[in-house]
Image (cartoon, rainbow, N blue to C red; front, top):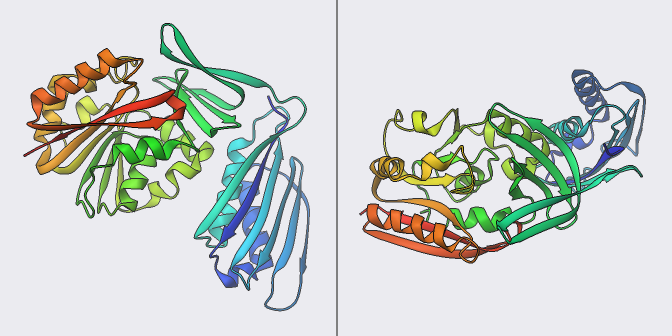
Length: 354
């Protein structure tokens, strides 16, 4: 276990009144610490002048929290440092950071995460591209590991990719290149689409981007509730405030059973799943019977999107899946983008319902 987690927070477009309310902030953060079981052993603050900013610190048994505000600019800087000792406090640090941002009403924020301590253990993540070629991510720091009812879920910090998570040892998404993947998945989404269905996507990134592109309603069907819960704590930048957005609905369950029961039709259906052919959990969702069901759930002029795999290392699988789409849809399209976490070129396919 590493010795601690240090979050460096910068926020802009904050509520001016909150940036002047040192007593309200101290009450809020002390209540959050109490709720998380974090012991506060002391606090101090300094107000520069009436109606100006303040500096506040809380001394914790696990380390400290510090905040400095600039009401005249609507900005603040803060840091949250929690030592792990016998317990990993990464989730608590993330919760405290989000509590700080909520109190100040921050509309724009950045969080830099740094693992601390001389005993931080570096690991290697190996991505199997083919039986003969592996991609190795060296110097990765394991932040958290869990086993749900379905799979092992690991979160890492990496010098190039930032935060990332793996399912059963396979890399899924990272902070620094998730846009490459999710923008490709949403490439054909029309502005102001009324209804978007995402199958998988428990990290929230695809749904968040769909709403940003103007979708009026997004329905996410995710198998594993633990993926949703843990990604909120360890990869909050991917989902943001998605799960509290009234335009987004989450259904937990096997899509083989939940999707047939859905009412209505959709402007776009996105398969944001683990890799086809590599996952015992998702293989059935790539088969022709399920894809035909999805085609029936589409509105006229709507589309289905999925990722196929590496056109270099997994050409046979990519071609077979694309031919399956061509059998079901009169119009199809194939697109290649670079996803560094997956080893380079990655293929996407779209089927359009006429």
